[in-house]
Image 1: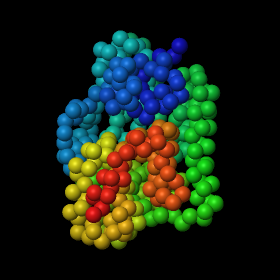
Image 2 (image 1 turned 90 degrees about the horizontal axis):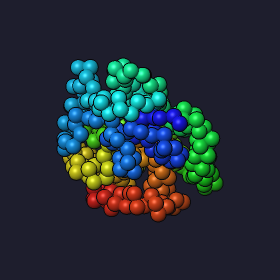
Image 3 (image 1 turned 120 degrees about the horizontal axis):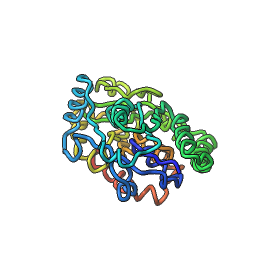
Length: 314
């Protein structure tokens, strides 16, 4: 049996979703709860457990990047004990997760080097393809097609409903960070489109970047979704005052219409097909509540979302 380690939470999520976790022998400290309960943590971060503000986190990562340093490290003794055949890693974002370069440095000291498979999606279709890459590497390619088939039925249903009702696109702004404000990039603009919206400040297929407040005011979004990378709702709510203090906040169409929402990060910045499809379903319900309602499972995951949004919109 192929022995694998996952150095990114999205890959771990996919492995569990496809029922292939028997292949998994090591994970990162940020992986899904069920994996953390039963698999050893191989990847750690020097900021783990620290409670920095958004601005402080941004400064730390910018400084590390400028100095060519990584904030992540591998428990090499544990990796030596496991001796995996495969390690799944990524090069999409060196800020959010350990990258291929850092992984390669860790495995270079092993007596038998595992195959490093980077998963680096740029758009939503690429995310779906990563599931096939993982399953194929583990010798279980058929598991990916069954997994993706069920998910794509959900997104097809949303698109069919939008077309049947000839729904206009909502003018959306999705923020990946609060201080400073970052737009959304990579696959998230495609999620927004499949949910019946358009984000004209986004960067489809590319990195998220900082955007000036004047540009946001001129764009005047109808709907704002705040989903800072790595933050769950409660954590994001602690820093919403950093947005509401901006000049003209109360004049934004989204604020006036009570259409400002906070969401868990993993629905958007954790690129596993199941979480991103959940994100599409959530967005569809926020954009077009007259057509879509959240299923019970997603309501439980984001139960405080709407209540929290109303608090910051008034």
